Every structure is written in structure tokens, then in C-alpha cells.
Amino acid sequence: MATQTREEFSAGNDRLLALKSGGGKPLLVLHGELGHPGWLGWHETLSRRRTLLIPLHPGFGQTPRVEWVMNVRDLACFYARFLRDQRLTPIDVIGFSFGGWLAAEMAANDPHLFRKMTLVAPMGVRPPKGEIMDMFTLTARAYLQKTVLDAAHTAEFSQLYGGGETPEQFEAFEDARSEAARIAWQPYMFNPSLPHLLEGASEVSTLLLWGRQDAVVPVSAAEVFHRALRDSRLAVFDGCGHRPEIEKPGEFINQVETFIA
Image 1 (cartoon, helix red, strand yellow):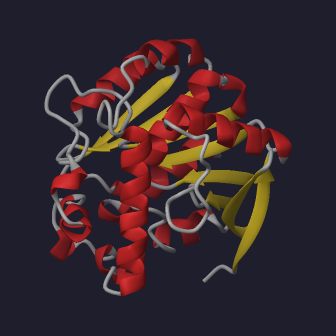
Image 2 (tube, helix red, strand yellow; image 1 turned 180 degrees about the vertical axis):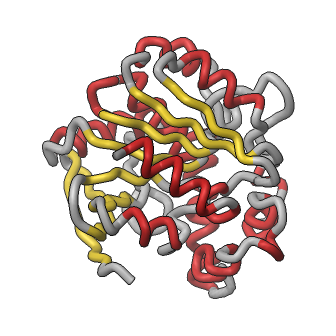
């Protein structure tokens, strides 16, 4: 397993904790709404050629909350400041679910932040058909179960978040859910202006990855992103829910590695 280090950075006057691993050109990884899921097979594979930089979102259990961040666009500005302060732009980014929404907001605000952007079943737009699942009507564990199509046959499902069975992990889940609710409650997990703003980020080369049976963010939302981002390619995995990185790991890695090469 690749060595992981935990580092503290600053973004203006605020702190940001991040994990780093691997070697080579940096790849920014933005985790989803339940926090960093732990070290998985796709992390290990990508870290052989890239330096993975995995920030732990403010208020999601490890990095302290940033009080002036009141919505996802504010959080996007916070991360843009971090990237500029660290002289990391333009950087390749991969964002998952809530983290995909965050990456899209960053690109809409400043397309020059990124070289290539991979969005994995991102939240952030209202699906034309269906609704984004309301995770606050479920326990964290029940919500986690619904993020995959077939948990029993998803090899790494039991490894997510260390299994999620400890009091510490449950507390981390609730911290993440609380902060997600604070900054993304109204409207729930989307920004009505984002599709229009993304049209101004058309030069950002983008890969969109989705599971056809995604129960969290319906695949209809993929077409909204695809239309807004003119330089984008969409890959939809059959027999797959909201986590193609563990449900279809071979296909997922092939898509990502080919795209960011």
C-alpha cells in the first residue's frame, strides 16, 4: 500500500487538512457528502503515477469548519484560494458526488483552475427525471447501502469508511451530514444557476462517469452536465449505482487513466 501522509495547509487565514500519497503530477481528489471513504483500490492504482491530494472538507469531521463558508459556491472559492496559494493551478481534479458538484462550481467560477476535470455522479444540478436522494430521511448507514446497486457483490463496499461500525465513524458521518445540510440544504443538493454558469467553462476538458442504476443522483442529470460542458465525454456503466469506482473498478480506472494521461 502506498504511504499516505497527513498535512496541514492554509487558505488565507483558514486551515485545511489533506492526505497526500503517491508520486508524479498532482491529482486533486474531492470526496463526497459522507467524507473521505478511506483508501481504496482505485486510490492505490492512481497513486502509482500521480500524487493524490485529498483535502478533508472543512466541517466534515477533521478540518475545522470555516464559518464564512455559507454555501457550496463559498466552499468552491475557499478551495480556489487554496490551489492558488499552493501554486497548483492548473491541476487535474476528480470529484465524487458532492465533491463533483464542488469541482463543477470551481470550474464555473474560474475555468483556469483545472487542466482536466473528472466528475463521478456529481450532485449540483436538478435532474430532469427523478430527484436527488434525500440522505437526511435515512441513517448514514442506510444511505451508504443505497449508494451501490448490489452491496453483497461489491468487493470493497465493506471497506468504505473503515466499515462504519465504530462510534468515531458514526460521529464523523454526522459531522459530514450536518455540514452538508448547513451549506447545501436549500435547494437540496443543487444550484439552479450551475448549468448556465458551466457554459462559460466550456474549455475545461471533462469526463463524466455515471452508473445507469444510480439511486442517489439519477443518470438524467448527466445529460445536463454533458450539454453545459461542450468539451465533455460521458460514460455510463450498466449494472452500477452511485459508486462506479468500487462497483466497476476496472472500467472506472481505464476511463480515468486514459483521460488524464
